[in-house]
Length: 366
Image (tube, rainbow, N blue to C red):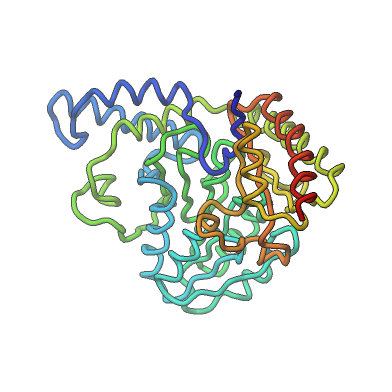
């Protein structure tokens, strides 16, 4: 059976450009901090990747701190910012890595959203206190795709002298990001969301901002993140960043997800969640009346389609989606379909053809 992978928002297959450079480096040894030939070659690979990631994110290479992924980058942002205050502000639809990271470093204020999952910048500013260290805001939601008014929140917080951390893990490779123009203080990304390797990510740090490191030990990453660099993973991250054609790929991904969204309007008991236009281009979230998502996912799997329900870090224990709860929607029954760099029309056709009979069959069992 031909398989159709529609869970790119969880993790995306490795791009061939990343695979090629990673394969080369997996067979080599060399500490980028050493001055012998192998070490210098490794240093060149790391710094080349740093330039590639910086170019993709609209910043200078020195602002890029490599991490093991977005989760570590977020933890480093929460920990580093906590030195400036005992309070952190975040939206109620942030990823669990942001919420738990903030809660571990002081008191937290959650700011609610509208039914699309979008926050009001005025409400964010109302939550800021004299002891607020940082405001966290995602670029776009990991479950329903709604973009946040990031630029406005950043500008308003700047006027208050409050740090802003942007979680862009779901946006990199799918939306055009220019960190320097945005003016945010911190921004976290992960490589595997757009065709880079797992185990690689980055925290972008605004020029001039000093942040205490989360990991202590050696002086790697200019003493901002200790530990021997994973050269193969970092090189793969850089190669993926250089290979992605954001505008072209985003347009195609939006076309594919619009096919799904348009088809869903014809299905009984199915609703589209999130903002239908101002959204990340690569994912669509559907609410399904009266049917548990696990049954839908298993039905799709038998039809050769890989899909997901709820956020990637909340569904393993079958808990309701905190994102949909915050939006005032049915948090127990949703289906997230997400496309990526290698998704085809056939993949989307497969889910459009498979889902209606699956839903009809499950409803007939009730």
